[in-house]
Length: 218
Image (tube, rainbow, N blue to C red):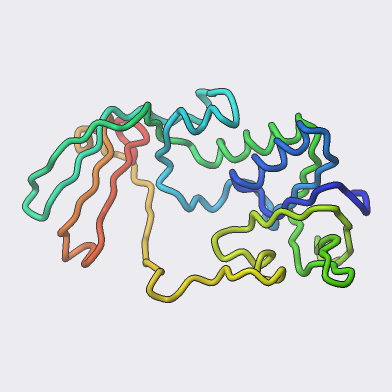
């Protein structure tokens, strides 16, 4: 790893990898760092998206497309539902594979990617941010950059260190639980995403979603 780059991107999720890829394609010297050992985990996403958005960043690849969806169904507490067609071609991602593929595309564009590397502070020169203090395998070191991208999540520490407000109000938080279940053949419709509202015994005040990843997994 060098000691200076044009751009440092903190966080190798879709936003960070896409930013690193575009910057590298534009000729910048880019470092993309991810604090976790693996890119793409843990999955914090229902994994449904539309093809039109995805192809803005990369060509379609069946490796990270788990399923194609033809409709959305919204159920009430009595089991009645309305079916709504998607606004575009909807797919269910294999999100881990997708994130890895997007980071790999950033590498092919010329970006350097480092995992197990966390941002622990920003480097300042007066009022200017001139780099990031990184930590990897217990060792801390400074890397300078002309630009820093904070792609480390909705509660970005990097943005907070820069003086931006990134802590949502408590009433903006929602509690959720996500599970991937298998052995569901014949019990789910693999062609539709489902939303269940009014399920007070399961999700009081909220909703339950079922996004099919295959004919037997959701």
